[in-house]
Length: 312
Image 1 (cartoon, helix red, strand yellow):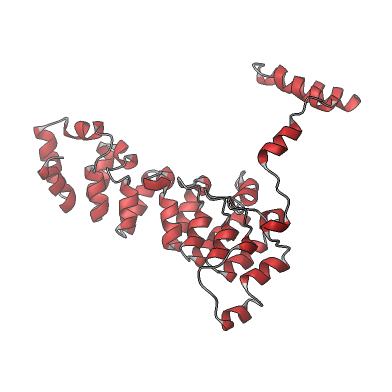
Image 2 (cartoon, one colour; image 1 turned 60 degrees about the vertical axis):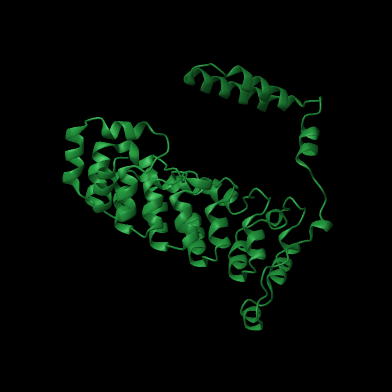
């Protein structure tokens, strides 16, 4: 960018911005053509100049989702520099900015979860609940990041919101996200065991099925097998009626060596063996037959198929 444009964004001088546009009407257009760049919006968001920032958004809305050379959007930079007012104004402009993926796949929602900014965390999940599904390039959820960074209050808020949410996908989220495995196969319970966090383990054990409690990571270890990074003192152990391992064991946790090895491939081999039941045949025919059929005919076809299967 031109030095005067950078200076205008750093100081929030809107008059200089329009002087530059008068001299060169394509100045912002050329900036937009660069795939990764600190735009004037990035600079203004970092500095917290809200008026300049909103003027720039009016002129170039596309800048709001653009990443700079370091892989950060304007909202990422506003969060990094604690420019809360700038974050809220960006959010008002586009609620979807909560889910913009930056460096490492981190979204603004991930950022507030790992830094423990509970006020913004609540605001983000209220306006853009779908962002809770986003994962980093390491397949980490917001729950992984909150626990990994010792942000127990943020973790509590996320779980509390999840179990109370009336979103149409909430039931699936509750089932999948608390037992989600990252790139190393570690679930949130694995991370809680690594961090030796009994309060997190206590919350998780109230929501996980036994098979999720005994999930193995890529090393074949369950949460019970994990050696914690730091030991608890006696007072902490007393507060939670035992260590993390005791809590997991009482909830039915087992060591990975005591569990059968069921690979995904072996499960698929069993399900794809040649012989098919009558029900599977009808279900396959139904699935093939309804492709390309208009919606009304498809619904009629499904009703007839169900009646045939029921009669059979």
